[in-house]
Image (cartoon, rainbow over the protein chains, first blue to last red):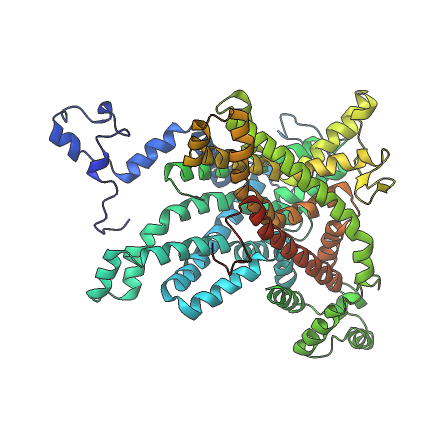
Length: 314
Length: 321
């Protein structure tokens, strides 16, 4: 984080309602020390986050799924190997989730699917946040024509429903994992850019930014050290929620046949295939669907928890 | 704005890596006769520079001519005429259900804060926003289509899961008795995700307004609690909710594409999905332009409805508030 001299919570707030006496460590009982006892913003946020049961549940879910995605593929069977005698078999000891319509191990496919979902989610959010911060910062810092051009572009993008915009990008770029990542990143940076721009417009007027400018600190340094830390909290929330949204969007695109293509194990694609056998082999649909729901749910809950803990307004 | 959107979509669609004429002539991976390709290019004007194509396209859509489908030569305008009513009916009912159920649940959980219903709404909201629309659709199809039939549920609980049925309507918008069952599941699926967000938004907005000074004044005047809630809190709390329903229309379109595909509903959404995977560009572009125009109109209506909900906003007084 930044080393700027911005006090995160003012001592005058402390003897009030939020800090009860049992919060202070022992040996800090005399008045002066109690006033000086300042919990860092990060500790404070973590305390609020950890009290939120749903958020902790989400965090556990996310960590579990990350482990599954990282380690799982080394432990399971080949997700592409076909066993010609057992199509659509129900779960047993050999195939924990059964096999799919081509006799492939569904457990392995779901594990690989989760890994792909997480990979796409993280890559999309990384790109999206980078584009969003860059353009938002440019608009907010430069102002004038740069600002109005970027805002116009955002307006145009926002005027097109999300999935339709994604279709357009897919049509231009092609299909497959890389195309999905680029498409989703290019269609979802708008919120980040707007948040960053709003933060910049506000922060530009702060005295310490003015002071930094007056003493001749170069612009990139002011942006990086003094303004960006101000907008980092809403961005953290957007990152958590964005991964969940990207996982959902990837599933939707793959489901409609314009996203990830066979034989790559993608959860959306598995559901799309499974619908044909739903009445005879419902497990083909239920396991991938459950994997998507848990992944998205985990990230959304963490995002919601962070929003409350960091006190970010929507 | 609209022009920008159309331009963006046009160039995205037509800056394709593969030549559409070759796709029409033979499909992917085949090498069709070059003469055939040339003829097709000529027919659709694809041999001209992209800028010329673009200007011509703009000129044509002003006269509501969106070209013809690459797949079967059907004029796009005709596709729109045939399919738009089904989509509009589905979307209208979904928005109505979304608004009434969402606002109702939100008001309920705001009035009875931290009650069982309130907690249930919060949990349901988290869960429903994580379920992909198409998965929800299949689950409901399975329960009310397949399971209800097998388990011998009463007749009214066995719902059709595919298509639009007899497609008979009274006064354009109201389904007849025979049509009604076909409408239930698609509307429920389409409305569910947004309804739950509307509910949360209405709740937090109600609680926020409930704290304000004029509500305290109303209490001090001795108004009944029910009157305060319905006349004072509700009306002021609706502003962000209505904004959301407008913004959410974009999400609704996306969900409609998925819902219509799952339920085989003969609307614009399922056609957009088909056209996208078949690379049927004129259809895709034409339908998309229609959706973008409707999206713009919806947002305009939302802006106008502010004045009704919040008389402080007036448009006719030189922009002053």
